[in-house]
Amino acid sequence: MSSVTEPFFIERVFTSSSPPVVFVNRALSTASPEFTIINHNHPEFENAVRSRADDSVLHVYKDVFYNIPVQVKPSQSMFYVTRGSHIGVVAGWENALNCVLGVAGAVYHEVESVAIGEEKVRIAIDEGRIKMVEPWAFDE
Image 1 (cartoon, rainbow, N blue to C red):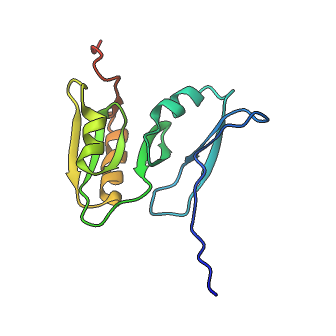
Image 2 (image 1 turned 90 degrees about the vertical axis):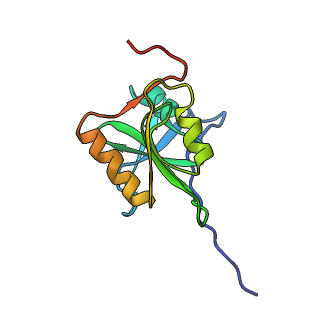
């Protein structure tokens, strides 16, 4: 009899005996994870919770949160979003659309891989060209 171990990732923990926390990866998605725990008392907690997209691992680079998909299906399109309701790399047009719908001046591009998309996101962070925007909001 053989057994299969499946990897898992706990993104947030909410229990009655402990306050909520968010796990954030500081490493590139292609490197070994370097997790940081952000608890509910941390000044960036609300921003971290707001930044996390569904089915993604939240990463941080230069104090900017961005998403990397947990899973990419074969032949699924990849997009990176640098101005949207969520920023980072997303798998599939439906997820990209969810990040840019209702965002004035949304910026997104199709890429060949998660690694290339993450590189583009980090370059945008370095150059100050990244912004998480509330959908249907007016820019100030």
